Length: 353
Image 1 (tube, helix red, strand yellow):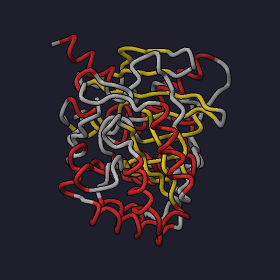
Image 2 (cartoon, one colour):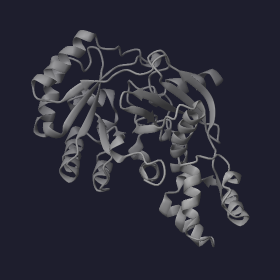
Image 3 (cartoon, helix red, strand yellow):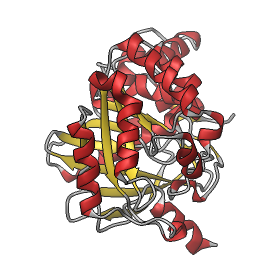
Image 4 (cartoon, rainbow, N blue to C red):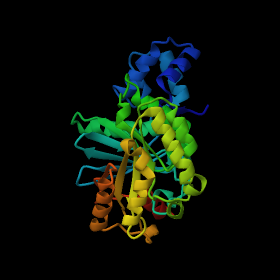
């Protein structure tokens, strides 16, 4: 019998599974408490469960599947974890410290097929989707690290912006969100969770219909189709004529602000001309839009791109702001370690090959 991660079950799914296997309904709450409040790592630690229930769980599920391969710590408190999955694949998870709390960036796929030409994550094509349990376990591993350090800290925020396209692994991603948001478990508030997509328009409609308070970010990176297609091949399938109506639907359905991610690439998309085009693109939705300007972390394999100058970043920022577009420049985290998403994983795979 092949086991699966118990972290992949929502509370409702766990309850149904236990009842179907002859257990009392209240066992689900006991198991849930052990997993997410006491954060045990072995079924034998669930001391208020009888032997029959423990054996049942152990026969069908595992708790630990990720092995820490590398841990890099930055001087600013950022920690990048490289985890090895049971099948030997590698993924990245990042803990970042902010004034408002501790945020974890999780990975949803092994590799990525979106093919953004500036991104380290896409250097290795998608091998497979992560299960919901493998995504949840990233949070658990980071929280267990914090527990061991003993400073009484907890993960308070999550960004689903690691390796992979979250909306390309939609069902597992949604199970993950329901588990970490559950008030009887980790209880990470929906408004403290952000999911980022490269622009899978059809899934933005689905996400809008979920009726949840989780934040949405769209990786835009260019204000016109010609430029966006050059740097993001996903724009061929979902050009701005498809993407922006999906954004409008989301805004109308949820009345929640969308963040547009915009990586500034020197002499590519950082001129005043592109800034003004971005103003035009967002002008009818400016009341619910926020542009996150991101200084580029150079990647060796993408040496055609360089970081925009500070002067260019300031001019771009001021152009948006002076035209009524809410915006900011992302505070950099972990600049003294493998900062770009996917960079640590890519280096390790190359070293092994």
